[in-house]
Length: 81
Image (cartoon, rainbow, N blue to C red; front, side):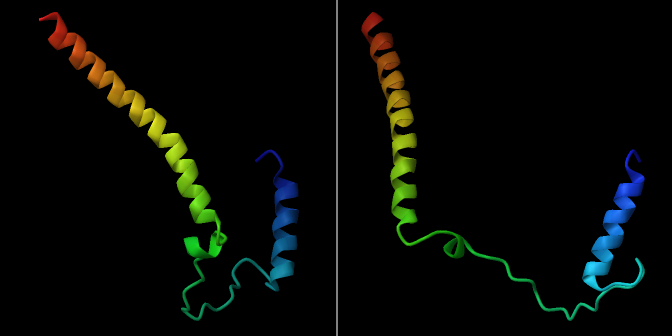
């Protein structure tokens, strides 16, 4: 490895901060599931409305253009024949 000495020093400092004496010593895991934040934990009260508005402002113009293209193609196809 290119920076093997620096890597080993950083790992040694991490082990010291964690209170581990060597790499073979690990803390006991009691089996309790770690906390996983939900979407409600990450957004504020007014964020859902702003997310819905921004989603509509993004999706609706693209959907309208696609629908317009299909209608225009159908109009041209049936108008020519």
